Image (cartoon, rainbow, N blue to C red; front, side, top):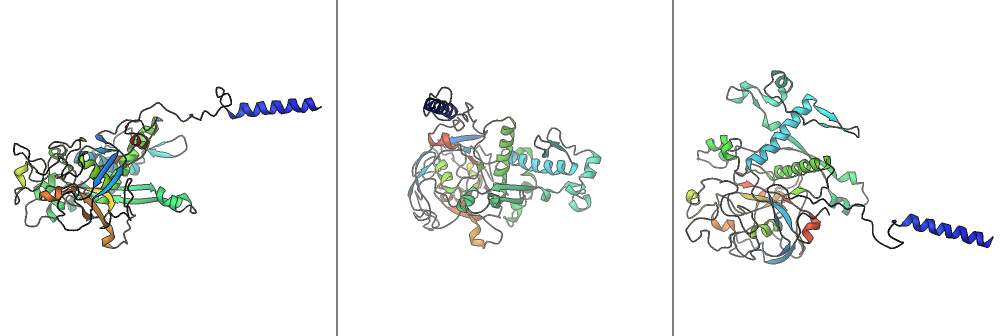
Length: 426
């Protein structure tokens, strides 16, 4: 009887050992690598890689506004991809056209069924905008010819509404007792650029011709989009994330991270191009090379706008890039960041020394002073000191300007920690 009990115990132990390991583990701790993939995540189109490293941040030249809001600090930065140029009219138009077509297809009922029983828009066909029957069904998207001032029926761009759906992971972590669904938010954003900024912001100046053409005419396709406020820029980042995520997941490919605006420190780290404490992306201290050619698009001298080759904006890839391959980090258009402006933003009490960031959720009920967002880089209408990469400026989140644009970043964390981009999905 004792021998039988020992035999049963031996069999049980063998079954336990067989159930807890892999066939080749021989009872040893070898790890579970069932999630391993050999696929390399590609670099996003139009982006260049900005290495991880240590940055001396803050004013490296004159504090022209005497704001005393950017003392020199040392930060450790994790690498990321950044758009080589500002987002162009053609790129932003892809967004607004997608929004336009999604509204049309939803109205027309053009959906396809998914395997899980849900539905999604059927993008296999194009909307036949010239078809009279389609135009009748989409009548709500048009402005009647009698109301346009041109005598022709036009699409009502004010109805180009995009729903931004986001999960606030940080808020969920900080509030563990609440359901995660509490932090799944939706915001409806009108995404079409404000083309009137060219007229409204320049009194006693004939800018009507550029206001009529800048956003849609093919000659301006590669120029930076303007007239886009901070809320719209974030909506673009959300759409770009969903666009790429959807395409990759449909092919069962790994997807990591999301597109976003850079925070203030990320923007400065990228703009410096590895040149510590240099005032400009090209180094400095001058804005001209040895041949007397200007190195950026700004307002030289006492207002000779065209001396640098551009009266207003110029192509997004004009002039030489910095050492990271980024164009127009200073000049052309100033750029939105995702950081909320605080005069004490460089204080050791407010920001960490690894990936410093000051973010806040903006609400329509917030007072005006709380809706200030950091803008970096200077623009075509600014004098040279505003092009200093350490200069801090701000604009209100719901305000669009003819001299403010943006670009996106994208982080693959695993690759960034070892400065080996493209290895995030290994």
